[in-house]
Amino acid sequence: MPVWTILYSVAFWPCLFAVGAACLLWGTRSQQCVALTLVVGLTLGQLSLSTIDYHGLERRLAMIDVIILCLLVACAMWKPRLPLIFVAAFQLLAVMGHLARIIDPRMDRLTYAVLTGATAYCLLASLITDLTLTTLRHRSQARRHA
Image (cartoon, rainbow, N blue to C red; front, side, top):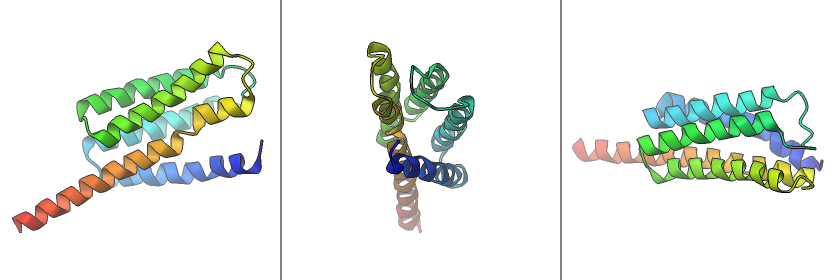
C-alpha cells in the first residue's frame, strides 16, 4: 500500500483517542455515547483482525461496522443534532463499502480499504464540531445570564 495510507492509519488513532477523551470530559451524554461507541467499536474492529489484507470481505470488521452504525443511529435519534446525524451517515458510508465488496468481489484491495476507512476522519470531524458548537452555545448562554 502507498505510504500515505500508512500515515493516514497511524495518525488516526491519536486523533480518535483525543476526540474521545474531549467528548468524555466536556461533552453531553449523547456526545459521550457516540465517543464511547467509536472508541470501543473502532478499537475492537482493529483488534479483531490479525492481519488486514482486504483480499476478501472482512466479515468481522463488517459486522462491527454494522453494530457501530446501529448504535450511532440510536444516539442520533436520541438527540437529533445535525453533526451527530452526520456521524451516523458517515458510518453508513463505511458499511456501504462492505456492501460494495459483496456486490463486486473483484474490487481492488485499496479501493475496499478506502471505502470502508476513509470516512473515519469525517466521523471525528463531525463529533468535534458538535462538541465545539455545544460548548460555544453553553458559553453564550452563560454570558447572557451573567
